[in-house]
Each structure stands twice: as structure tokens, then as C-alpha cells.
Image (cartoon, rainbow over all chains, first blue to last red; front, side, top):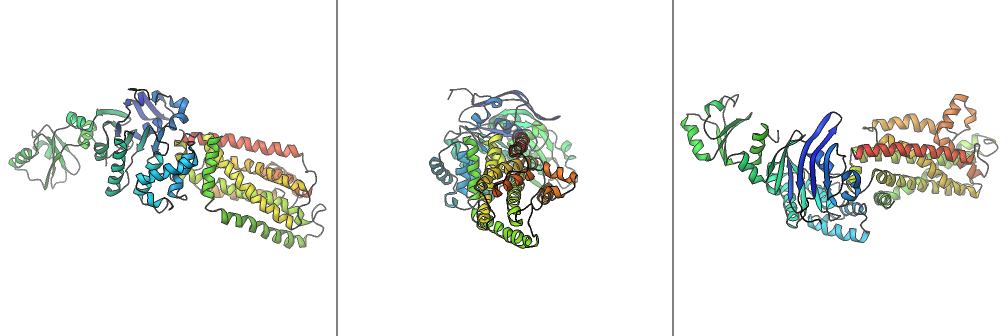
Amino acid sequence: MTEGRPLIEATGLVKRFGSFTAVDGIDLSVRAGEAFGFLGPNGAGKSSTMRMIGCVSPVTAGELRILGLDPARDGPAIRARLGVCPQSDNLDPELTVAENLTTYARFFGIPRKVARARAAELLDFVQLGERAGSKVEPLSGGMKRRLTIARALINEPEVVLLDEPTTGLDPQARHLVWERLFRLKQRGVTLVLTTHYMDEAEQLCDRLVVMDAGRIVAEGSPRDLIARHSTREVVELRFLAESQEVFVDKLAGIGSRVEALPDRVLLYVDDGDAAVATVHDRALSPASVLVRRSSLEDVFLHLTGRTLVD
Amino acid sequence: MTATLAVFEYHLVGYRRTWRGSVFGSFLLPLLTMLGFGVGVGAYIAGGVGGVSYLDYVVPGLLASTVVQVTMFETTWPVLGNFEWHKIYFGQAAAPLRAADILGGHLVFVLFRAVLCAAPFLLIATLFGAVHSWWALATLPVVALLAFAVAAPTIAYSATVRSDSYLALLFRFAVLPMSLFAGVFFPVESMPVGLRWVAYATPLWHGVDLCRAATLGVAPQWSGWGHVGYLALWAAAGWWLARRRFQTRLFH
């Protein structure tokens, strides 16, 4: 591989569907071996960007280079070197777990024997070895997801694209997926993923961009972003009142920022416990108090004025 | 080409699960048809049609119309499902395949199914004495072409509609009238002139006339190459439309 050259490079990338602008001029570059994330709410343009990178959606304007190639000209050649795990599984429910991998391998021109060996190896990797011969239909959501991830690895891709890899999974299944993806990352596979879960972004991404309304509003490592756009700690206060808004004034001056959400007020502070003491000094009595570390959720709230998951 | 074959191979792997039932059906259906129409209805039609017994007359027609029905089933729900329900085509599009490979691989499978249902039909018809010429073997490439002519535009249609209620419409307003009036059961010439031209316009009539000429060992009613050309026109136009639909839906 061309040393140092980014695997994915976009400048002024735009995607329009008719009069709707899904991606509004973004710049990004993904280096070999890193786990890069797009964090943002639904409709932020993450999936449209992923589809352009996956070479299944033509670029409206701007420049995009993947593995040094132009998706408009070399779509199939690029796709041959990518692994794609789409937002909703598109496995064949009628085929067995193993057949889903071996038939897919053939689309990459992989010989049958190699395909069978790789399928067995990948099924072990995603802990589905024992289900190789069973049909896909009765598998749980988490198992299907892991099978889709295995399918994305069948061609030993240089970059794996994961569009919301754990959306719709229960917590246990999510952790199993994260653990496998982490293992991939350790092997040096470049991961590009979209998510609207801040914990997912924090767990998996070395570097991420925060997207909102088709634009990138911030970029950096999870830790950087938190340091840059939030305080060290956050105090969450719930008041028994119709509106939390009215408490904003009463809390003014405690910490660097006060945000009112429909069900709670957030205080951005450096020392949570000290802030809680000040709240009580002001004779305010919230129904519940929680002191926690700042997260990417807070970064997003600060940058856009909205929460990630509504 | 290899990409198209890989897609064909994928469809074959799925078919391996259901082939027993489908092969059984491929033998049972013509057998029942032979008995019902040929022997049963045929007994009431003394003197046959145009000098041949009714069984001999109706068998090639039924062969062509059965192929059309199988083709229509294979190109409606499965195609809609691959876009709307299981999204199989989108998974294929993420691999290094082009729209033409995804479409072509599925189409080759449909043609394979069409020929696979025609062969036993022909065999059973031969056992019933309804085949009169070695030309009957030519019905196999003919039904493949007929299947292509019907499959391509149907795939284009199934790739356009978003709900399967539109597919039922296709069977009610295209397949059923075509099966009844395109010369399968009685000569088109016994209908009023206006309806005749509707029959001539259907791909099925051209397939029926070719199959009938082949199994009876006579010249077709219309130019043989004319039939082939007309069917090829349907196939080419259908392919062009279907390929465009696949391109827009998979790579938009």
C-alpha cells in the first residue's frame, strides 16, 4: 500500500437527492489502521456518506478518493477491497449460515475451496461456528449482525464499513459485537463506522467526526472532543416541575454552562460534588441528582443544541 | 461474465433447497394437463383443430404458456422481495458486481428454471404420443427465448413497483388474458380481428406458434425468424428497462 497516503479522502463532498441535500460539503481523511467514526443523529448524512464511500452512491459534487481510486470510474475495483456491513441485514434467510458466506465469496471471485475455508474461519471468529449448517431465519438479531460482519470480512478487506453496527441490538449482543470489532481493530483492520450511540463511538473510535444536518461540526478523538467542547463533569438534576427551564436562571453561575432538557437540567462543571453542594446552598431541592463524567453526548448537545437519540 | 455466473450460482444454491418439490411439480403438472385437456376435453372435440387431434394441438400451446407462467412467478415476487423485503440485491451491490451482473445472474437462473420445466413437459407429451417430429427439441431454445422475452420486462416492472398488490394485477390483467387468447387453446383466427391483433402482440403467441410448428413438424403460421426477431425485441427492450431500474435503485 502507498505508505502514509489516506485510505479514504474527501474534499467538499456533497450528496443531493433532488432538492434535498443529505451531505453538504464535508472534508475527511481516514488513515490505514485507524477506527474512524461518524457520530450524529438520524438524518445527519452519515449513511449517505457511507454509501458514497461504499461506491454504491454517486458523488454529487466534491472529490472522493478511496484506496487512491475514483469511485465514479473504479466502483467495482474499490468494492472488491472493501467490506460492508449495512444498516439493516440483507442476509438470505433461506440459505444456511455458511452458504451466506460462501455464495457471497463467489461475488469476489474467490475460489470455492478458499471460500469454504474462510467461511469456517470467520464463523469461528464471530462465534457462530456451531451454527454453520443452520438456516439464517431463526437466528437472533445479534447473531445475524455477527454473521453480516463475517460476510463483510470474506474478501479480507482493507477497509470495513459498518453502518450503525449495533442499532436494534440488546445490550449483551451489542457488547459481543463491540468485542469482535475491537479484536478486528487490534489486528490492524481499518474500521469506518457510523453510530448515534456515544458509548459506541467512545468504545471503538480512535477519531471521529460529529455530523449534523449534512455537515461536520467537530472532529477529533473522543477524549479531545470532550476536553474541547465540554467540562470534566456533569451534574444531572431532575426537578419535580412542569418545566425544567425555570431552573436555568436559578442555577446560573454554577459551572460554565446550564442546559435544560425536557426532563432534566444539566450543569457543566469541573467539580461535580462541589456544584451539588452549591445547588443545595441555593435552597433548591431537585428530586434526583447524578454526577457523571462528560461524554460525547454532551459534546453533541453543546455543538448542536440537540440530543443524539430522541 | 464470471460475475454474472457467480450470481447465477447464488440462485442455484437457494434452488437446491426446493428443487425436489419443483421437479415433482414439473412432471405432475404436464401429466395432469395431458389427461385433463388432451384426453378429457379432446374427447369432445371431434376432428381436432385444423386436421390435428386436440391433444396434439394443445400440448405445444400449454408448453409455452406453462413456461410463461413459471417465468412470471420467478420474476415477480422474488424480484420485489430482493429489493423490498430481504434486500438481497443491495447486499450484492456492495460486492464488486455491476447492475448488469445482478440482473443477468438472476435472469440466467429464470431461464434455467424455464427450460427445466419445459423438458419434463416435452418428455411426458412424447409418452402421450403428442410429439411428431425431432424438431420438438427446438422447443427448448424457443422457450428459453420466450422466457427471456417475458422475464426481462417483468423484472423491470417488479423492480419499479413498491408493493406486491401490483404484482397480482399483472397476473390478472396480463398473464390470464394472454394464456386464454394467445392461441394456446384455440386458433387466434377464431376471434374477432381486433382481439387477434392483441394476441399477435403478446410474446406468448409467437412462442406458441413456434412450439406448435416444432412438435407437429410443420411450418409455423408466421415467419419463423419473424417470431424469433419479435421475441428478441421484447427481450432487448425489457433488458434495457430492467438494467436501468436496477442501476437507479441499487446505485443512486
